[in-house]
Length: 246
Image 1 (cartoon, helix red, strand yellow):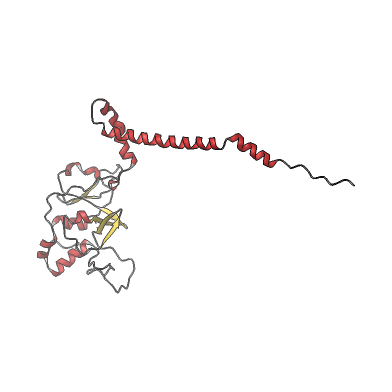
Image 2 (cartoon, one colour):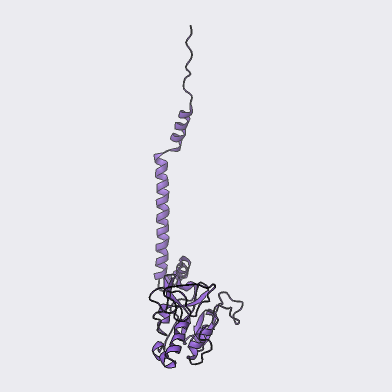
């Protein structure tokens, strides 16, 4: 990484660009989904989802993976620093940018738009392949004073979405609360979720009735006995044509 030895960066940015994410959490070693994919800007450390309780009021940043590298969502990155002219990519319907420079596995000869720091091929009009490349370019061309226009003053940064499965809603996660809401609705509680469950059940029953009615109509139009008798009649041999007697 280009800025790993630079001590002129803010502590949280220095830690963000040097931290190793997605390693197993030592504190919650035996727990499921214990990858350290959350960065706490106030403590300058990476944590796993099970470590969130002491950091509830801190600024938290969700780290994601794309082609085996650490990335940030553009919406999250724009709250912390100016990500203009950094190459973005789309994954899971969200735009992301790389945190650090990706290693080049083989030498390439590109005669087009390239990164201003590491010569990686880019699309037009991007100038940097990652946040670290842009930070390194600012430090080399403008010095520490150039960071004032690059960094934003972010006082509040909660996690942008649920922590499990990247916020994707599944049929199981939608219907599970409905089963526990039936009791609350019968005792005078909020039965909105239970109503949704009943609506889903009613829809299922309608589909089943349509299928059964369609099957019965097919059976009525083509009775089984009629079909069998037709097949047997077609299989019967016709009367033999005998040769004339002379």
